[in-house]
Length: 342
Image (cartoon, rainbow, N blue to C red; front, top):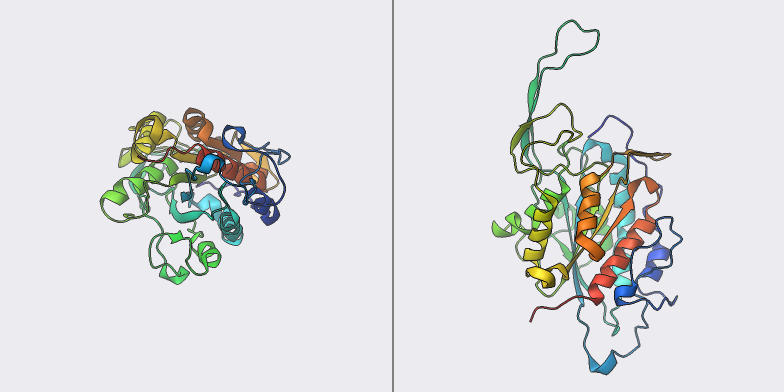
């Protein structure tokens, strides 16, 4: 959470671009390892799901991937107010895109969509602050922040009877737009990786998110934040500000989160083939006509270590159509290379 003006997203993505990306008529010939991140400028040619839906699967093979479980981890700190409004406006287009998605054998995608936040409950101690020109330090304080701790959103006012939407539900686009507005009163230290981990492990174990994950589905993670990740195992720590510099004690390493995801999806190389991720954050301390973002160093490293099943796009682009098209391209490629459980 910062006092600077948050990014203004003029248009999250184009419905036309996504329609092409998820089953449109423009051929690309891309499949499997050929699919990858698009050019961040939006001029790249990699698009998603463009195989001819009427084409037969070679040698009578069945699709290896017909299901995707989407998890959105959205920054709900105070600097995300403009993004929050725009997400609610534009998320229905994402639903339209996945509704249009067809597998190589022409089957519609069996999808689920859940939303959680970057908010983790913790206690922060602010030390005494010396203000230039002020004769004595201002007294420190202790702040208790609460977060969703990985719980998926459940809003009956948004037509939800469970903590996710799925193929066949009524009014998914409209209701997703409603639940996607997670608010801007979340914890000031953003912990999207920890929020992701708790949503798939802790909140499944205690029953909160139980039933969402399917062993035969690709897990597709989408992170959206204008800060770096500051995921720590500590429940209380001292900090001068919310920059995560220096990091608090107990900062969880990136490999630990990768191993968690691999394990959730079955472990080892097979587990790594069953999840994919897209991060939309700051590639550097960037400013644009839409606002500013801090360098998401840890999120960049997460994508780097995750390998070909992950992609990073800049939140400072304002219009994020290229970033989300790239995300779907990555998910499509991961789906093509999915190793189903035996």
